[in-house]
Amino acid sequence: MKKKAYRNTPAFAFLAWGSFAFFVMLMLIGLYTLKEPLMVKGYYLMGSVGLISSAFTLSKVIRDNQEDEERYNQMFRALPEKERG
Image (cartoon, rainbow, N blue to C red; front, side, top):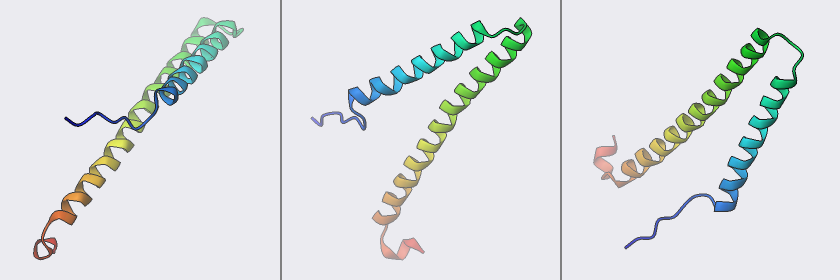
């Protein structure tokens, strides 16, 4: 049976999630201590949440496109020379 191989070490994954949580916490502390009305704080919070979620989505799309390109290239190399065009 083949052992599952991960691309990143557990330490790197911990660093990535830890830094993400740390900076989200800093952003929330900054919003909480901001001397502006609640409406302005809400605007900044919505913008920040939108930016974070779109960054996750963008990174997933880029990764998926790269994996699809690699899979296509593997399939293309496996075809006989006549079928490649």
